[in-house]
Image (cartoon, rainbow, N blue to C red; front, side, top):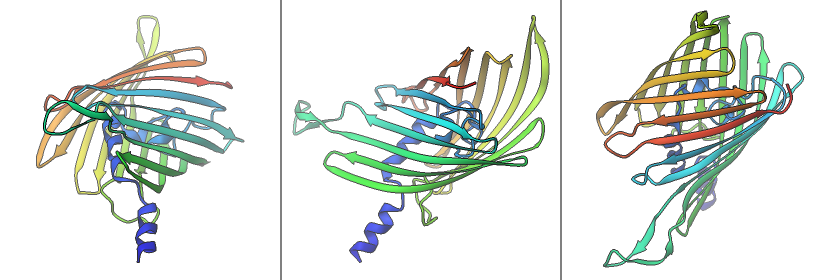
Length: 291
């Protein structure tokens, strides 16, 4: 019986992996529609869209009220014209947790609390579909308690017509496909509403997006957003997300922008926090090593 329980625990993400939902609040583009070398962390069917070798790093930071900080890293490479592989890494730490007794004074050192993962994924392009899967080893520590689990995520991106993209993916799906509170299910639709606009002397595109997040405890969240791309060097994305928690619903705004210079792309994002918990910030750098 003990071996069976241990096997079941290994086949799912540790409870603290829910902290990655805080990192997701800074995504102005729905998780299922993410692209780039770091996108595999959210949708294993994304990657770098079979575009050579690329890598990236993002830093996530929240206000002191939440006290989270960490990073996401990834590297992807194409294998021929129809396949690709990638590695995804991530870690979040809870800052400034200390031990106390009967007074506010600290006793001993800080309490280590973190969640982290390392994943290996692959993509396959078939017709108008991009299919992907990722196996991820998840690890957490809360003070002296440690836990490890393995998850297997599945993702798909479909482009039925040139301007429309439909995507769906799992996030921290247990390898036995059981229902767990740590699992999220993402879906998204992106439509190129206006193409080749002229803003001054620069061509621009306008994209409309809708995202849906379903949590395993029957909570639904909706995201409505848009993006303006100025050529291939600058873009602004904005969205509002309707969050559900404890029987209440609130709308939360998110804004992000990117600037691309040569092989390098810099991303900046900010999401306002609800109930005075402060904002979540994200800064990222991506590099195309091979054009």
